[in-house]
Image (cartoon, rainbow, N blue to C red; front, side, top):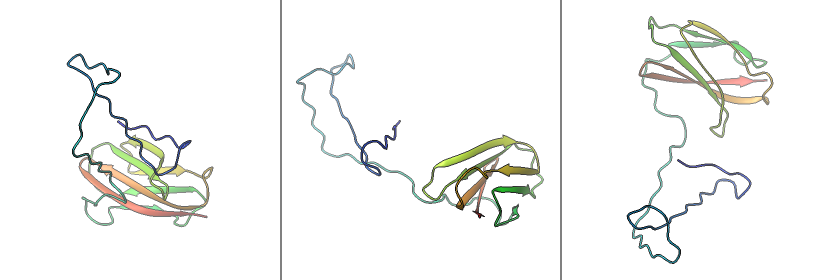
Length: 130
């Protein structure tokens, strides 16, 4: 797990390694050799797995209050997540409703991404808040 601390340098990853013996407590002055380290982090929007256009957002653009209508026959709980353009999750809810009213009018005007997860199907749409 990583903790993002923006008080340091934004968009910078600090990695701390510590070596220890078999008791898993770091020892001052111990030596550790690392010959390879990598970090993989997803960027962008994940690939959509569900059918195209199975949910509708209206009105779009909106004033921050809009509805999401899921047009599938699934009885699975749906998770609705909203992300800003830098990928921060600003809203999340889970329910079984086919139509949901969302209010993000307290957030800044701009472009947001709505991610609807229904079982194993994931769909993403863009919403503009004016």
